Each structure stands twice: as structure tokens, then as C-alpha cells.
Length: 164
Image (cartoon, rainbow, N blue to C red; front, side, top):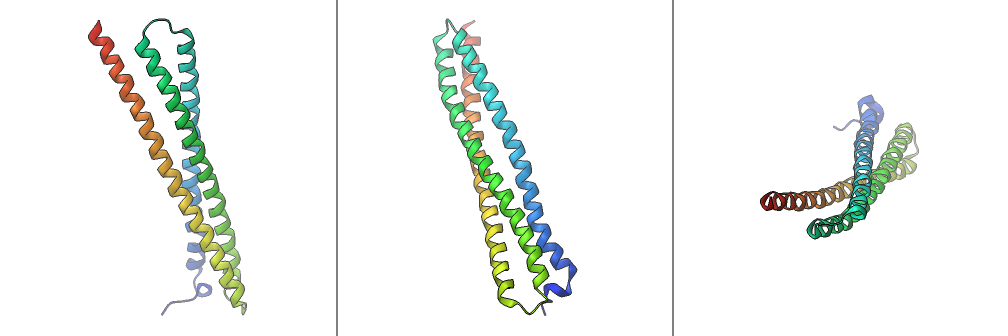
């Protein structure tokens, strides 16, 4: 037989801890994404300076221009991912607070408010989880763009080596 939430303090703890763990995961991903965005900004500034000072090698200049376009896309993906992560943090925090409220109502005679609170908590947690998943998929796409830039730079470096 399933014991009600009011009979088990561990059930209440679980209702609160699960969103808290997801909140922590979202926070760590948001912090990492902010660091990645800072690196994209730094790299964009470096390439802009190189293009401004570039005189010779047309292949390198063409590569840098294409990388600037790719850096713009990467920056856009990172900002969108951060938005999803921050939204997830808010949803998980809301789910935690609503779960606490629901835990306080479970042993009372107010059944329909409890059911509404359970639904709100579930929706908030689900929206947060979806936001977390979407943000992670955006990070994967951004990483693929970064790798394609690395491959192109390595190919250019190999061509310089062969030419010398």
C-alpha cells in the first residue's frame, strides 16, 4: 500500500530535493554557457583585429571572415541556451516552492487545492526539464560549429606548413 506524503518525511524531502537538483544542474550549465559566450566574444575581437591588420594571405582572410560569421551563430546559440537555462532555474525554483506549499496541504481536508498545487508543480518541473533539454541541445549545436572552425584552422595551418 502506498503511504501518503503526510506519513513520510522522506516523501516531502523528495518532492523538494528533486527540483533542487535540477536547479543546481541548470545553474552549472548557465555558468558554463556564460564562460563559453565570453570566449566567443574574445575570439570575435581577436579575429576582427586580425582582419583589420591583415595584408597578405587571402586564404587566411577568407577563413577569418567565415569564422566571424560562425562566431555570430555560436553567440546566438549560446544566448538562447542561457535563456533556456535561466528559465529552467526559475521553473525548478517555482516547483520547489509549490511542492512545499503542497506538502503543507496534503494532510488537510482541502483536496482540490492540493490537486491544483500538484498540477502546477508538475507543469513547472516539466517546463524546467524541457528547457534544460533544449538548452543542452543548443550547446551541442554550438560545439559542432566550434569544431568545424577548428578543423578549418587546422587545414589552413597544414597548408602553410606544406608551402614552407
